[in-house]
Length: 271
Image 1: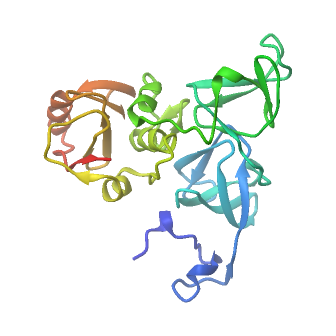
Image 2 (image 1 turned 60 degrees about the horizontal axis):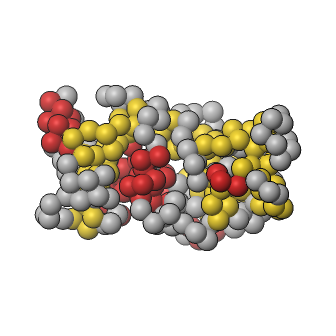
């Protein structure tokens, strides 16, 4: 059975490449679009539960726009629905927000009205440069808060540490709220490393199993949970126990998670 999270088909429409593999009323190529809101829920069904979130500037392929909801596939392969008004035309994105968050301003002046809060990882198109600000398609953003897309981060653990203290949010992918797999995806994507969206997919796809002593950047998987090592003894993870992204000694985490009935470690992976 195909994984509905990764299969761009809903019975009415399906991606053209699925013709003959799934049943649909019509098969379509899809239209390239992008997200135009800072954070948008990607839902399992129109008006349904949040599966994941997409950030400003994220590229998507839209297969159907119906009754105010767009059925689409994100760049990481995840399929779902967003409200139609969250989408805009394709633009060439040039920079990403490289701090925990920033603001887009009306003018190149920090005292001017702020137009939008922008999370880490949001993608923007820079159109002009001032002394301390970039003019972008979202407004004027401090230069110090942006990083060119052709200069990715190099250490996923450093990115994960930017999320320290961020509130836990099931299905969250931003510095407004994040869950365990969202933290890993944000950390790897910022380093231009492909990463699936959910922890079960990450366990199957990322890295290789290891028996060596743990080191910075290693991933630890439980059933439905994942964390990243920041050193040989300490893990950072977004978790519902603390309702935040926290540091926790790995042996303490293993014992606590087992004691609360969520089982043993299933895999240790090195990227």
